[in-house]
Length: 447
Image (cartoon, rainbow, N blue to C red; front, top):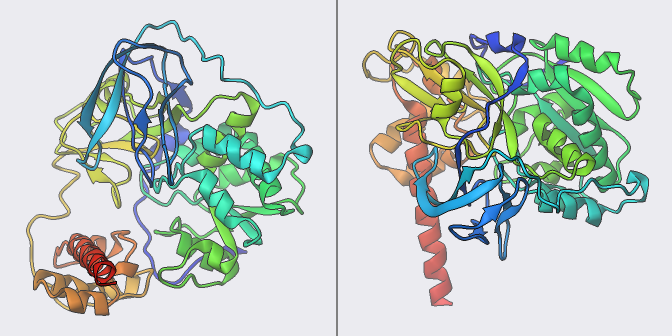
């Protein structure tokens, strides 16, 4: 049986890099490590210019509130602490480290030796937090907090291997090359939550990964491999929960509210790595692809490596790109500088030429065809939200539940009128959120 959800679309996948083994990039000469790579409070640097740091050493901590520590991804000398624009164009305080190429490992990096069956949930949460692990699927929510918030609330753990964005093949290669890291990470999560079984969910365009998992002779009562119909956006948590359990996640609610918790496959591997080696999250797998890339690849990249270095490692550009994207083509962010550093949430770097990026030749008007309504996985009315957003009618946008939009881009992708629907909805959402904040602030003052 294959599992699916209502709505969504079938995309041209462009998964050619699924045949490319993961290769460790040549060590960068300089890394720029942002102090904010996660949802929550930014880190405060605990190093200064001129300090010598080791690989895996803490260089930024969150003093209070939600957040993850940040670690040095190479050994070397702190050159400076400056404000650098991240992939979203937001200035973030960052630690710049010059590589000494000695690859010294911090003495704090020590494997966890206590038996898992004697390890408490609090100990697991502490190790995951200290390792600086945040969701590697793109949302970047601190993983320790996700585990903590799921305690005694959930009965279903799902490992998300849908990887429904075109071009990206990070999870596919991970399952082919190191599946036990994912499995063992899941087992650690199950121990923390006091559960006996979990689900690894894989789309049916990755049957080689399914076969690899089946060849491991896993206990089917503990590890259940379930195959999903390949459809975008299957990787969204609401669609994944509905496909596997039949439960609908109401707007404004978290997966734990319907008894579920979801972790990305690479996040599970990072958890296992933190236990087995003691190394915090200092590197990640990045798919580098697109028609401008000389040698599309899957690379293991230190956090803080500039995009230009990984593109150069892949042979550079074969032709001038019109657009370089951080992430997938559906939900990724177009870049204006190749100096942008890889962060924990960077799953891909894609470069597209004028010929490939020709889906929007000119703007037009909505023709009321209904495609956006038919394909919306959240069952919204995108055409109305976009129309009211263009008129700056924020009340109507909120009435039509703009905040429930997950910004998957299926509406824009399918629009024959070439209307940038999702961009209008993004603008409307930001205005609604800002207005609601102002209302809440005013209400507090009155009280």
